[in-house]
Image 1 (cartoon, helix red, strand yellow):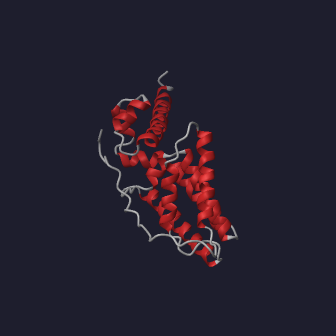
Image 2 (cartoon, rainbow, N blue to C red; image 1 turned 45 degrees about the horizontal axis):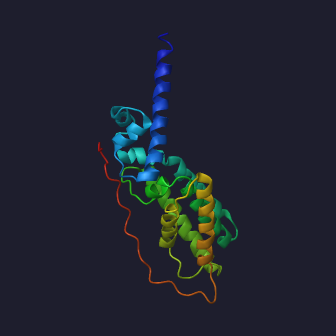
Length: 215
């Protein structure tokens, strides 16, 4: 019996970790990243002390909760960059990024926030943004993407996409795909396209509140 005890403890700890991350993703998607850590613990069915043992800060919890989404995000931009047609690659990125964020709305808030101590998460986000910017430059040079497009426009699209609220996950994705198609149509270069209003630079992403033991 004592030989099996360490394995059981490891199994329990792993179960707790997965419950915490699942609860965190669900709560962040509905209430944003400012939700108290204690509420995450309550939703996960664990004691606050258990949550803090696994994730001492909210930054650690958020970045771990959305680590898989960041990997998927990189995969999307890499697929777009690999396309020999930069406009097709750009469209693919917009479509798949919108769908990725529609499936997990909390990821949009995480992508827009800064995490000073999460070096890997920050590096993956910066890589994705630089890659999209490079793809957009190439699509402009090919004459397919409107000349007044800026990277902030992708951020605007993702922010707007996260505001889609419908009755089911399937409908959410369906609505997001239609929205992405509308956005792509607006991005396409055309001789008679009306110029956009002046660029409205988005505020720098705000750090996640509650870096320590909050809530």
